[in-house]
Structures are given as C-alpha cells and as structure tokens.
Image 1 (tube, rainbow over the protein chains, first blue to last red):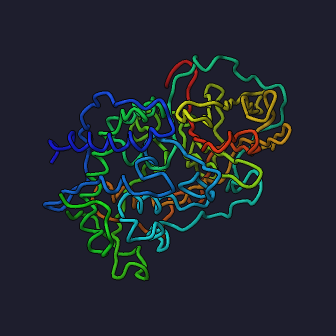
Image 2: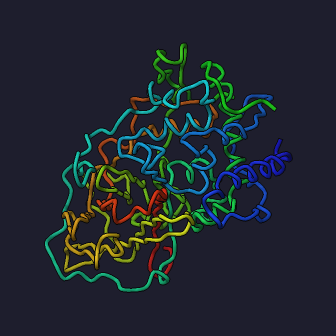
Image 3: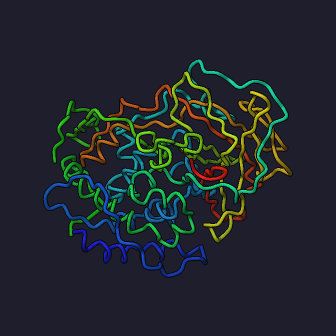
Length: 230
Length: 220
C-alpha cells in the first residue's frame, strides 16, 4: 500500500491546487514533494485500503472543501457566514468532534454534527466562558500573581533576532496529520509553504492510515464513511 | 487490532448512532490541540529543555457585529497552583491576512513580556486600529481607542479527551469518552484581543489567522 501513495498524493495535490488557487495568485504547480515519511501508523484491520480523496473533496462551507480547511493551516473567517467552527473558531466550539466528522464521515449522508451531538468528547469547558472581554474564564486555583509595575523592560530586538518555535492555525492539523518526523519542519514553515503543498504527502499518508485503522470501528457503528474502498 | 489494556466500554450514547461503543484505555498524557507540539521542542517527555513559554496551546478567532476577537493560549495546561508563564525572550505573533493573496500576512500583531522589578508587563504592537504600542501590567484590560487587549493567566479553554485521542491514534480504535476532559481544572497563559471589524475587514475578503512563537537568540 505504501508504494501507491505518491501517485495518490499527486492526484490529491492537483485537486487541492485547484481548490486553493482560485483566490490566490501565488498558487503554482507544486514542486516535487518529499516522499511520505514513515510514521507510527495506527494498526489497521486486515485488508483495509481506502481512498481518502472523496473526504478531501467534501464541501464543508460554501466554496470550501475539507482539503481547503487543512491546507493551508490557518483559521479562516468569512464575514458572510455564521461565526462558528470551521468558519473561525469560538471558544465553545466542539472542534475535535467536528473535525473527526469532516475527516471521516460522508457529509451527504451524515450531519457534520454526528459526533458532537453524541457527544464523542466532552461537550464543553469545565468553567463557563465570559460573555464579554476577555471571554476566557478566570484562572483556576490559588496561584501566585504578578506585582504592580509600569516601567517594563520589553525587548526592542527585531523579529529577525528570534527563532521560530511553534505555529498553529487549525486545531488538529499539526498534531494529528503531521508525522513526528516532520513536526519541527512543519512548525518552522508558514501557510505559504502549505499552499505549495510542501507537507501534503505527509498529511495524505497520515489521514489514509487513520482512515484504514478506524474503518472497522466506523463500519461497526454503521456510520457512512467518506473514504471509499480501493 | 486489539490492545492490551482495554479497561472499560463507554463513550457513545446510542441515540444517534445505534449500537455503539468506544473502548477506553488508561494512557499517559500527551499533546492535543497544539499543546506540547512540536514535541522535540516543547514536550518534557521528549525534550530535556522544553520551551514551555513558547508552546502554543490553541488559537481562537471569532466575530460579532462590531468586533473580531482573537485569543492565543500557551504554556499549558498548567496546574492551578502554578503562576502564569511570562518570558521576556519569547515573541508571540498573530498573523492576519485580509487580501486576495491569503497566505502572506498584512498584519503581524507582536506581543512581548517585560519586567519592572518582580512585576510583569505586556506590550502589544501592530494591532489594527491602534496608532502605537499598547503596554501595561499583565492580568489587566488595556485599551487604545476601540481596541482592548489583555495577557495573563486564564482557565485552559480547551475541552477534549486527550487520553482517548492518544489511544485512538496509537491503537486504531475509537477510544474517546465524553466524561474525560484532560484540561479540567488547569490553566494556560494567554493573550486576548478585541479588534474592531472595520480595522480588519477588507471588502468581502475572508481573513486568515495563524499564530507563531519565536525565541530570542535561538531555541533552548
């Protein structure tokens, strides 16, 4: 199965380029991507061999399919649409259950809220969020606090004097769909690199591996999968 | 394939799915939304010098009739007895693109911490709708015009069965439980901003938002 991935990834890359490039003149044919990185794939049932292309083609928001949500790795807000994940991300949005649904379920047959309606994960935060600024709930516990001051010694060095440690846009992309071996490089990159599909083989490999691994559980639950058997 | 430490069957309520079950397994804590990622730089289980201050936990962005609200949490989850994590050498950036070349930022909001003796302050620069830096003590609402910002210690807003996620990914078996939230009772350090929509929107263009952290002089 692993040997077929580059061909499959190339097809997906073309699909995503078509999907991403409409509003962005920077999209150009992808450079040769590195091969999928060997990852610690979850164990899959015997014979599981799924094509995830239909999953990435699923339209989640008007004009935006799953592939567009994952690549590039940013939160996106369209002011003409309601403000809730995946159109932005509110504090109270059940992002994990929604993400699992769009990655694995056929959204023509299953509501995107299939998992969040159960819910699969805890349905909300342990403390209520505030309705006005600063929105986040107050810190828990009895913790030390900073004293008073006003002449703070902020650094004035240019951003170029700093070295990247971490980046984040959409939840679960870097943590779930990027292999361990590629994580540091991924966090050193930017959305413009995502748009060039620099990590696409890695993402498609990991999503395929997860789909194969979970296929028996999803079938046992009588859920309609977006991936199709090869 | 079956795992060794299957302990209970729980999770799905059968209402929507029919007969359903999720297997739960005791597991070690690990990363989630972006907590402790990348592991080689931020996870103490992997890195002997984890950069806690620069470890992004989550990024949130939403809007209402008048404002776009953005929050980035980091340095967590942290036990409720611990103080916030402030580090003068970390640069926090919220990148925002609002034009048609949607992967390069038109705005880069920078946040830095600084000290006055033992007291910590915060500085925001480049915030749309402002004419200069916003500075002041941590744990305080700071305003300039119609922009409000704050940095400090907050409850960790993420809710998620981290244990179930790890088990699912390692075993290939759906293993979530809706009664198990790893982030209960824990805190993050965070930055929060309320910015007028009029300062960010550009016609009908969507806006794209992502966060980054960087350390002065190189990674630790």
